[in-house]
Length: 285
Ligand SMILES: [Zn+2]
Ligand SMILES: [Zn+2]
Image 1 (cartoon, helix red, strand yellow):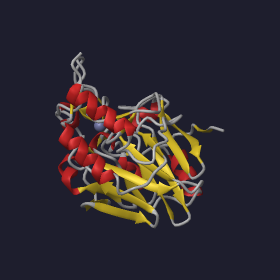
Image 2: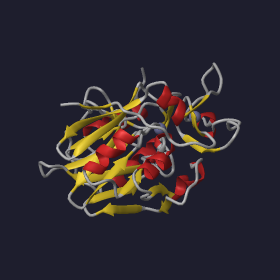
Image 3: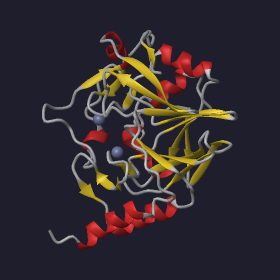
Image 4: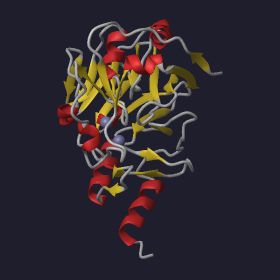
């Protein structure tokens, strides 16, 4: 049953808080728009041929953006900006008795969404899988009481809007008991996955595009750049897979996860990855 939230509120006065119109990653409050988006200039993303454009939370709000929240499965909710903002990721809220975690926050937030999240106990932590998914992470934190936004140390330099809520971590993190985040690298050096136990007692992996589930729900892929189709080496993929195999899981949700492509595989080192490696190394056609 979709929960439709459509009551944006103001973000306050003062200087605008800029967001890249292409990727929706937030930038600091400044009088003038930033000169360019370093996320989009990187080879893993792209500046649209029409050029760099900027928006702001205020502008998005006034143009009618809102947040839709859906139950993906018991204890997991997607948080999606509508109309699509930036890359258009589906943020995910993992709800546990010990506290909630917001993963891959969208590039837009409004008071109604914050109120809904407060209603299920707020969030103990906000964390993105990688810099493309930083979205409006500082704005989300401020709207939800200033809780920590965890950032992989290896990707710390990609944070454009710095704030006291940003907390660096290295290796792994358990922001609330039972929710574990691990930096496994690949797409970005600091790319993360998140693991928790679903209501059915089976492991659930949130992978962003560190491990990207395909629409067949039987296949995952790995890329340095998805929009530019820049591959990762088999050695790097092996490293990502080995690091992720610490976790037992039954299904994977990537960063466009409503309805979520899921992959019922006990471990990512199973057939999908073996097939990927086989194609990368032996395909001759
Ligand atoms: Zn950008
Ligand atoms: Zn990405």
